[in-house]
Length: 246
Image (cartoon, rainbow, N blue to C red; front, side):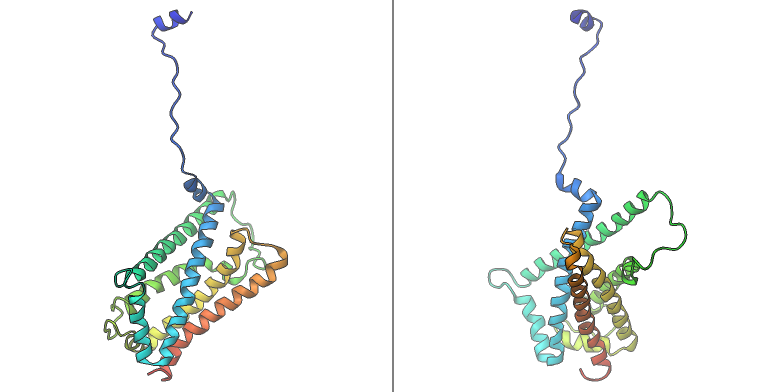
C-alpha cells in the first residue's frame, strides 16, 4: 500500500515550520501588556516632570543660579562620558517612553472600540468616571502638543521670543513675559495636572498593585503629586508676569 501510494506520486505531508514567537511582543499585543507599558512609561515621565519642575525652581534664585543649573546638566557624567552624554541618554529614554506611552494609549483605545459590541445606550455613568478620566485622551493630546511647543520655545529657540543659547533664565523671562504665551503655559499645566492625577491613580491598578484598603492612599498620592507639579509650573509664568522674576 505504501509503495502504491508513492507510485501514484502522492507525497507525504510535511509539517510547516512555525517561527518562534517573541513573548514580549505577544505580551505587548494584549490589553494587559499595553496597560503595563503605559504604567511603566508613565512612572518614567512622572519622574521627569517632577525633576524638571524642581530644577526650574532655580528661576527664583536669579540668572546666575538658573544659568549655572542649565550648564551643569550638560556637564553631568564628565569625564567618564563626553559633554552632554548623560543628558542625551536621559533624553533618549524620555523619547522612547513618550513614544511607547502614546502608542500604547492609542492602540488600547482602538482595541476597546473594536471589542465593544454595541454603543452605549443612553447616558454614561459619569459617577463612576470622573472628569479627569473622561478627558484623559484629550488632555494627553493637548499636553503632547504643548510639550512640542515648549521644546520649540525654550530649547530650540523657535518660539518667537528673543532666544540666546546657554541662557535659560533670560529665555524663560523673555518668553513668559508675553501674556498669551504665559496663558498657554498655565492652561496646559492645568490639563497636565488632570492627566497626572488620573495617570498616577490608575498606574497602580495597571501594575497589579491595587487593593481596596489602599485606594484611599492612592487617591491622596495622585492628588498631592498633581498639585505639586501644577503649583510649581504655574507659578513660573505668574512670577514673570507680576514682576517677581525679572
